[in-house]
Length: 267
Ligand SMILES: NC(=O)c1ccc[n+]([C@@H]2O[C@H](COP(=O)([O-])OP(=O)(O)OC[C@H]3O[C@@H](n4cnc5c(N)ncnc54)[C@H](O)[C@@H]3O)[C@@H](O)[C@H]2O)c1
Image (cartoon, rainbow, N blue to C red; front, side, top):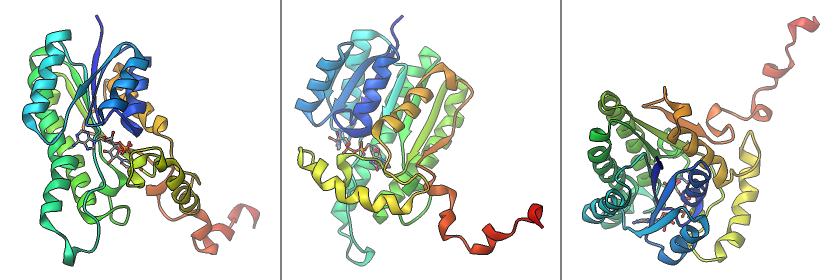
């Protein structure tokens, strides 16, 4: 039996890396994205994969895409709700509400839609794994614009809430909270210019992190692959932080010196 995975936002970054690793692990992978050329090219490269155009804002499109999966394969073992944008930027006093709605529909509402339609398939199947890509920005302030942070916090709580319901059906629902990962999302462009733009951001990340570098998409994708697999069979309702230590606390070199200098064993 071929296991089947469906990854949103699979044409780029963490979604593309997740599609690769799920294919490595034996899944037939459906790559869904609004970036058609890049998505098709990756699906062709992976072989045991297919691209489906999908704008995650639209429930009818999501339902149709998962309907196609069911027509072709008759099962869905993993849904990775990964697609997102940074969304509306700037101070709260000037926040344009139409951009709030756009941000919310892509970053958070899409996760609700995807989970809803995956549950309809996975419940009668009696199995499945849903992996929602949240962010460290959803765990505390200061890592993103306001609305992105709020939407990602909602993704974490939604994950916990739905995990409780779907555990009774044999379905695991987890989230991943990446830290700073080297993808185009930081750069405002999707074409090749993103790599040059990212270099400035990389330099800043080095200063701020216990592990002094940005993460690579594959380092998040390994967590997706693990949560999708039976190796994580006892894990549900969890938000797994993969962030190079960012959320662990203040850098050792920035902690007060008396934390470090008192060595009772040395007298
Ligand atoms: N890169 C980071 O530092 C970081 C940190 C924390 C969380 N995340 C999260 O990881 C996930 C993947 O982001 P990434 O960093 O790989 O960014 P990315 O820009 O490389 O990939 C995002 C993908 O989502 C797609 N997408 C955007 N809007 C869409 C829509 N309406 N419908 C369908 N697809 C759409 C894009 O086309 C793109 O392929 C996102 O949920 C993001 O919030 C990223």
